Length: 298
Image (cartoon, rainbow, N blue to C red; front, top):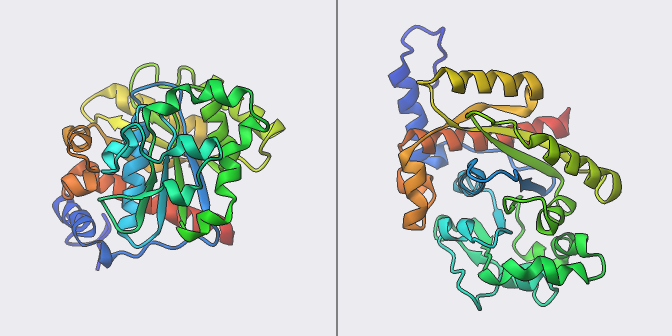
Protein backbone atom coordinates (compact mmCIF):
# COMPACT_ATOMS: atom_id res chain seq x y z
CA UNK A 1 0.00 0.00 0.00
CA UNK A 2 1.26 3.48 -0.82
CA UNK A 3 0.28 6.83 0.60
CA UNK A 4 -0.05 10.21 -1.05
CA UNK A 5 0.69 13.54 0.56
CA UNK A 6 -2.99 14.14 1.17
CA UNK A 7 -3.54 10.83 2.95
CA UNK A 8 -3.76 10.67 6.73
CA UNK A 9 -0.62 9.07 8.08
CA UNK A 10 1.68 10.18 5.28
CA UNK A 11 5.09 11.45 6.32
CA UNK A 12 8.27 12.27 4.36
CA UNK A 13 10.07 9.50 6.26
CA UNK A 14 7.40 7.01 5.20
CA UNK A 15 7.83 8.01 1.56
CA UNK A 16 11.62 7.63 1.78
CA UNK A 17 11.17 4.21 3.39
CA UNK A 18 8.89 3.09 0.56
CA UNK A 19 11.40 4.26 -2.04
CA UNK A 20 14.25 2.46 -0.25
CA UNK A 21 12.19 -0.74 -0.18
CA UNK A 22 11.71 -0.55 -3.94
CA UNK A 23 15.49 -0.35 -4.45
CA UNK A 24 16.42 -3.05 -1.96
CA UNK A 25 13.64 -5.38 -3.14
CA UNK A 26 13.19 -4.70 -6.86
CA UNK A 27 10.96 -7.74 -7.27
CA UNK A 28 8.21 -5.78 -5.49
CA UNK A 29 7.93 -3.38 -8.44
CA UNK A 30 7.33 -4.52 -12.00
CA UNK A 31 8.21 -2.16 -14.79
CA UNK A 32 6.28 -2.44 -18.07
CA UNK A 33 8.07 -4.08 -20.98
CA UNK A 34 8.05 -1.90 -24.11
CA UNK A 35 6.09 -3.14 -27.13
CA UNK A 36 9.22 -2.72 -29.27
CA UNK A 37 12.94 -2.32 -28.59
CA UNK A 38 13.76 1.20 -27.42
CA UNK A 39 17.13 2.53 -28.57
CA UNK A 40 18.08 5.63 -26.60
CA UNK A 41 21.12 7.81 -27.23
CA UNK A 42 22.34 9.73 -24.19
CA UNK A 43 23.99 12.87 -25.53
CA UNK A 44 25.32 16.24 -24.45
CA UNK A 45 28.53 17.70 -25.83
CA UNK A 46 29.26 19.36 -22.50
CA UNK A 47 31.39 17.27 -20.19
CA UNK A 48 30.57 16.68 -16.53
CA UNK A 49 26.77 16.79 -16.83
CA UNK A 50 26.18 13.24 -15.58
CA UNK A 51 25.80 11.66 -19.01
CA UNK A 52 27.66 8.41 -18.41
CA UNK A 53 26.47 8.23 -14.80
CA UNK A 54 22.87 8.55 -15.95
CA UNK A 55 23.35 5.98 -18.72
CA UNK A 56 24.65 3.23 -16.45
CA UNK A 57 22.30 3.89 -13.54
CA UNK A 58 19.16 4.11 -15.66
CA UNK A 59 20.21 0.91 -17.42
CA UNK A 60 20.84 -0.79 -14.08
CA UNK A 61 17.50 0.43 -12.72
CA UNK A 62 15.61 -1.13 -15.63
CA UNK A 63 17.66 -4.34 -15.50
CA UNK A 64 17.06 -4.79 -11.77
CA UNK A 65 13.36 -5.09 -12.54
CA UNK A 66 13.71 -7.88 -15.06
CA UNK A 67 14.06 -5.91 -18.29
CA UNK A 68 16.89 -6.85 -20.66
CA UNK A 69 19.21 -3.89 -21.21
CA UNK A 70 22.22 -3.40 -23.47
CA UNK A 71 24.61 -0.47 -22.97
CA UNK A 72 26.86 0.53 -25.85
CA UNK A 73 29.85 2.50 -24.61
CA UNK A 74 30.72 4.88 -27.45
CA UNK A 75 33.05 7.07 -25.38
CA UNK A 76 36.77 6.25 -25.81
CA UNK A 77 37.29 6.99 -22.08
CA UNK A 78 35.34 3.79 -21.33
CA UNK A 79 33.74 5.13 -18.14
CA UNK A 80 30.46 3.33 -18.72
CA UNK A 81 32.35 0.05 -19.11
CA UNK A 82 34.14 0.71 -15.82
CA UNK A 83 30.93 1.46 -13.93
CA UNK A 84 29.30 -1.73 -15.25
CA UNK A 85 32.26 -3.88 -14.22
CA UNK A 86 33.16 -4.82 -17.80
CA UNK A 87 36.75 -5.32 -18.98
CA UNK A 88 37.88 -2.68 -21.49
CA UNK A 89 41.64 -2.99 -21.80
CA UNK A 90 43.12 -2.62 -25.27
CA UNK A 91 42.62 -5.86 -27.19
CA UNK A 92 39.28 -6.63 -25.53
CA UNK A 93 36.42 -7.23 -28.02
CA UNK A 94 34.75 -3.83 -28.17
CA UNK A 95 32.55 -1.37 -30.03
CA UNK A 96 35.60 -0.43 -32.12
CA UNK A 97 35.53 -3.81 -33.91
CA UNK A 98 31.75 -3.50 -34.23
CA UNK A 99 31.99 -0.14 -36.02
CA UNK A 100 34.63 -1.50 -38.40
CA UNK A 101 32.39 -4.47 -39.20
CA UNK A 102 34.86 -7.00 -37.83
CA UNK A 103 32.61 -8.30 -35.05
CA UNK A 104 28.90 -8.48 -34.19
CA UNK A 105 27.42 -6.71 -31.19
CA UNK A 106 26.53 -10.07 -29.64
CA UNK A 107 30.16 -11.21 -29.84
CA UNK A 108 31.50 -7.95 -28.38
CA UNK A 109 28.94 -7.66 -25.56
CA UNK A 110 29.93 -8.73 -22.05
CA UNK A 111 27.58 -9.39 -19.15
CA UNK A 112 27.75 -6.73 -16.45
CA UNK A 113 28.59 -7.69 -12.90
CA UNK A 114 25.58 -5.58 -11.80
CA UNK A 115 22.77 -7.76 -13.17
CA UNK A 116 22.24 -10.89 -15.24
CA UNK A 117 19.91 -8.83 -17.47
CA UNK A 118 22.48 -6.13 -18.15
CA UNK A 119 25.03 -6.30 -20.97
CA UNK A 120 27.64 -3.85 -22.19
CA UNK A 121 29.59 -3.45 -25.42
CA UNK A 122 32.76 -1.88 -23.97
CA UNK A 123 34.89 0.93 -25.36
CA UNK A 124 38.66 0.54 -25.47
CA UNK A 125 41.33 3.15 -26.15
CA UNK A 126 41.31 1.91 -29.78
CA UNK A 127 38.07 3.84 -30.22
CA UNK A 128 39.95 7.13 -29.88
CA UNK A 129 41.21 6.93 -33.47
CA UNK A 130 38.07 5.42 -34.97
CA UNK A 131 36.62 8.70 -36.23
CA UNK A 132 39.60 9.11 -38.57
CA UNK A 133 39.16 5.56 -39.86
CA UNK A 134 35.40 5.98 -40.29
CA UNK A 135 35.82 9.05 -42.49
CA UNK A 136 36.89 6.95 -45.49
CA UNK A 137 34.22 4.26 -45.03
CA UNK A 138 31.05 3.86 -47.04
CA UNK A 139 27.91 4.89 -45.10
CA UNK A 140 30.14 6.00 -42.25
CA UNK A 141 27.24 7.60 -40.31
CA UNK A 142 25.26 4.35 -40.27
CA UNK A 143 27.83 1.82 -39.05
CA UNK A 144 26.28 1.43 -35.61
CA UNK A 145 22.74 1.31 -37.00
CA UNK A 146 23.75 -1.49 -39.33
CA UNK A 147 25.23 -3.42 -36.42
CA UNK A 148 22.11 -2.93 -34.28
CA UNK A 149 19.82 -4.06 -37.11
CA UNK A 150 21.63 -7.37 -37.49
CA UNK A 151 20.16 -10.67 -36.37
CA UNK A 152 23.03 -11.02 -33.90
CA UNK A 153 21.45 -8.43 -31.59
CA UNK A 154 18.39 -10.65 -31.22
CA UNK A 155 20.57 -13.19 -29.40
CA UNK A 156 20.71 -10.71 -26.50
CA UNK A 157 17.03 -9.71 -26.99
CA UNK A 158 17.36 -6.31 -25.27
CA UNK A 159 14.23 -4.37 -24.38
CA UNK A 160 16.36 -1.24 -24.06
CA UNK A 161 19.58 -0.16 -25.73
CA UNK A 162 21.38 2.82 -24.20
CA UNK A 163 24.17 4.44 -26.21
CA UNK A 164 26.61 6.51 -24.16
CA UNK A 165 28.13 9.22 -26.38
CA UNK A 166 31.44 11.05 -26.02
CA UNK A 167 31.28 14.72 -24.95
CA UNK A 168 31.45 15.99 -28.53
CA UNK A 169 29.33 16.27 -31.66
CA UNK A 170 31.65 14.23 -33.88
CA UNK A 171 31.13 11.16 -36.04
CA UNK A 172 30.70 8.80 -33.08
CA UNK A 173 27.82 10.87 -31.73
CA UNK A 174 26.28 11.09 -35.21
CA UNK A 175 26.48 7.28 -35.45
CA UNK A 176 24.65 7.04 -32.13
CA UNK A 177 21.89 9.39 -33.32
CA UNK A 178 21.45 7.59 -36.63
CA UNK A 179 21.13 4.26 -34.80
CA UNK A 180 18.67 5.47 -32.14
CA UNK A 181 14.95 6.18 -31.94
CA UNK A 182 15.21 8.58 -29.01
CA UNK A 183 17.64 11.08 -27.51
CA UNK A 184 17.92 11.56 -23.74
CA UNK A 185 19.67 14.80 -22.77
CA UNK A 186 21.05 15.16 -19.22
CA UNK A 187 21.21 18.79 -18.07
CA UNK A 188 22.98 19.78 -14.86
CA UNK A 189 21.24 22.20 -12.50
CA UNK A 190 24.06 24.72 -12.60
CA UNK A 191 24.98 28.05 -14.17
CA UNK A 192 25.27 27.90 -17.98
CA UNK A 193 23.20 24.71 -17.95
CA UNK A 194 21.61 25.49 -21.31
CA UNK A 195 24.80 26.82 -22.88
CA UNK A 196 25.65 24.88 -26.02
CA UNK A 197 22.35 23.03 -25.94
CA UNK A 198 21.18 24.91 -29.04
CA UNK A 199 24.01 23.41 -31.08
CA UNK A 200 23.10 19.91 -29.89
CA UNK A 201 19.44 20.44 -30.85
CA UNK A 202 20.47 21.78 -34.27
CA UNK A 203 22.61 18.69 -34.86
CA UNK A 204 19.69 16.49 -33.90
CA UNK A 205 17.52 18.37 -36.42
CA UNK A 206 20.17 17.83 -39.12
CA UNK A 207 20.24 14.10 -38.40
CA UNK A 208 16.43 14.05 -38.52
CA UNK A 209 16.41 15.86 -41.87
CA UNK A 210 19.10 13.85 -43.65
CA UNK A 211 19.79 10.55 -41.90
CA UNK A 212 17.15 9.46 -39.37
CA UNK A 213 13.66 11.01 -39.70
CA UNK A 214 12.31 8.94 -36.78
CA UNK A 215 14.77 10.40 -34.24
CA UNK A 216 13.33 12.66 -31.56
CA UNK A 217 14.22 14.13 -28.17
CA UNK A 218 12.11 12.05 -25.81
CA UNK A 219 13.60 12.81 -22.40
CA UNK A 220 15.31 15.62 -20.49
CA UNK A 221 16.90 14.55 -17.20
CA UNK A 222 17.94 17.16 -14.65
CA UNK A 223 21.10 16.13 -12.79
CA UNK A 224 23.29 17.41 -9.95
CA UNK A 225 20.35 19.10 -8.25
CA UNK A 226 21.25 20.82 -4.97
CA UNK A 227 18.08 21.80 -3.12
CA UNK A 228 20.04 24.16 -0.85
CA UNK A 229 20.59 26.65 -3.66
CA UNK A 230 18.18 28.99 -5.41
CA UNK A 231 20.15 28.50 -8.61
CA UNK A 232 19.12 24.83 -8.85
CA UNK A 233 15.44 25.77 -8.61
CA UNK A 234 15.90 28.54 -11.19
CA UNK A 235 17.57 26.21 -13.66
CA UNK A 236 14.92 23.55 -13.05
CA UNK A 237 12.13 26.06 -13.70
CA UNK A 238 13.87 27.33 -16.84
CA UNK A 239 14.37 23.82 -18.26
CA UNK A 240 10.80 22.76 -17.47
CA UNK A 241 9.50 26.00 -18.99
CA UNK A 242 11.45 25.36 -22.19
CA UNK A 243 10.99 21.62 -22.61
CA UNK A 244 7.67 21.06 -20.84
CA UNK A 245 6.64 17.41 -20.41
CA UNK A 246 9.87 16.14 -21.97
CA UNK A 247 11.58 16.84 -18.62
CA UNK A 248 11.20 13.98 -16.15
CA UNK A 249 9.51 14.79 -12.85
CA UNK A 250 12.40 13.06 -11.09
CA UNK A 251 15.58 15.07 -10.62
CA UNK A 252 18.94 13.52 -9.75
CA UNK A 253 20.53 15.07 -6.64
CA UNK A 254 24.17 15.98 -6.27
CA UNK A 255 25.51 12.99 -4.35
CA UNK A 256 28.87 11.76 -3.10
CA UNK A 257 27.64 8.15 -3.38
CA UNK A 258 26.87 8.59 -7.09
CA UNK A 259 30.41 9.92 -7.63
CA UNK A 260 32.07 7.16 -5.59
CA UNK A 261 30.33 4.17 -7.18
CA UNK A 262 32.29 3.98 -10.49
CA UNK A 263 35.56 3.82 -8.53
CA UNK A 264 34.37 0.44 -7.26
CA UNK A 265 33.22 -0.76 -10.70
CA UNK A 266 29.60 -0.39 -9.68
CA UNK A 267 26.47 1.63 -10.30
CA UNK A 268 25.08 3.55 -7.33
CA UNK A 269 22.14 1.11 -7.22
CA UNK A 270 24.58 -1.64 -6.27
CA UNK A 271 27.09 0.48 -4.34
CA UNK A 272 24.54 2.07 -1.99
CA UNK A 273 20.96 0.91 -2.75
CA UNK A 274 19.38 3.01 -0.02
CA UNK A 275 20.99 6.32 -0.97
CA UNK A 276 19.03 9.28 -2.35
CA UNK A 277 20.94 9.02 -5.61
CA UNK A 278 20.04 5.36 -6.02
CA UNK A 279 16.37 5.96 -5.30
CA UNK A 280 16.26 8.92 -7.68
CA UNK A 281 17.72 6.92 -10.56
CA UNK A 282 15.26 4.12 -9.88
CA UNK A 283 12.38 6.62 -9.97
CA UNK A 284 13.74 8.08 -13.23
CA UNK A 285 14.01 4.61 -14.78
CA UNK A 286 10.42 3.89 -13.79
CA UNK A 287 9.28 7.17 -15.36
CA UNK A 288 11.06 6.35 -18.61
CA UNK A 289 9.52 2.87 -18.73
CA UNK A 290 6.00 4.10 -17.95
CA UNK A 291 6.20 7.01 -20.40
CA UNK A 292 7.23 4.67 -23.18
CA UNK A 293 4.16 2.52 -22.65
CA UNK A 294 1.88 5.57 -22.40
CA UNK A 295 3.13 6.88 -25.74
CA UNK A 296 2.62 3.59 -27.56
CA UNK A 297 -0.92 3.21 -26.22
CA UNK A 298 -1.94 6.85 -26.72
